Length: 164
Image (cartoon, rainbow, N blue to C red; front, top):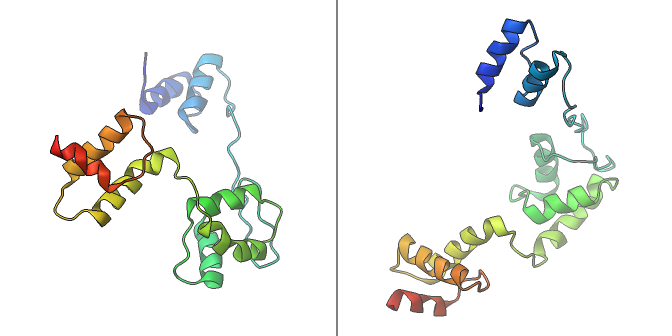
């Protein structure tokens, strides 16, 4: 039976158990009667100050502090694009200056679009090419391509489906 976090907290209160932590923590306490936390969460390992010689941390989580560093080095147009985030995660142990130097090359590389972004990229390309169409038209073209298992890149020939 599904229970909300609030319901689990109430049961813990009734049994005199701690109510802090995640749902997983609460369920563990209720099933074992033990007040411990189930798993340790990933600790924020962002350095207190980021300088050129600072080492990129393992399991980097791109924070405002990281953004401020990269904007100061690369300008206001800096963005945590997916390829750069992947580069940072794959290059823990290198310096932030090395990341700055790699940034332009990393984002220039032709990257495959991750599946979760294919639809948005398709619709954006559709509207940048086609004037006078609406979102329903774009979705019809997209659905046709996906149903036929065709590559998820907009082509003007996709408009043929709207004539059917």
